[in-house]
Length: 253
Ligand SMILES: [Zn+2]
Image 1: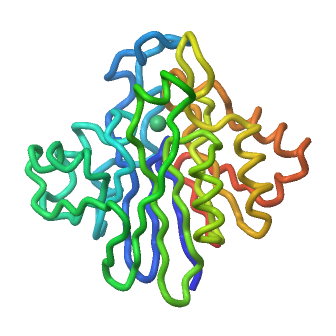
Image 2: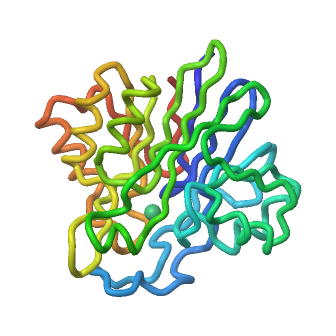
């Protein structure tokens, strides 16, 4: 069966997998309601753009949520309010008490892997930046979804290209990889999410996979635009394998 992935905005995705509808990293705040990320360039209020459709519409029919980590651009108060409290909520163990504190009753921490409706959900690691910044931003997770007869889907989460991403690709051999690009950064230090070079490295390390690049043009410190990324992927001759959806746009693989 084909997998349908619709980018809502930033890292928020609707994933239709093995006949089930999941939401990834819901962020539903309206435009400009939050201040800029502290100590970041391009200081504008967040999110930079509105949702492409009402959040109430996005959550309709959602059967489960995957949350890679709870930084405000991946899990916000509006999402916590709009999702049903009985939604199965898969995330990293470090975020379990936060979800329970917000009233969610079916919180399922993924330390290695869990089964849900015929889908094996495995946790993967990552590095949300290099050195001290990466340590301060940790922990983060990604997830691999696998089911009989379905292409394996790897949602890398907020990570740069690193050993953890490379070993996730080796171990799971995904057919589809969602990468968080944007090359988010603070005033000092390198990118904390994938730069164009990181997306290229991911594509080259997974020669059979299709990539979907998201996490751009919605939060002030994400400086890499879709146009910049397209240009650089084209120059590196990997553009044919990388989809760069607009907000609201779906990709079927
Ligand atoms: Zn992020």
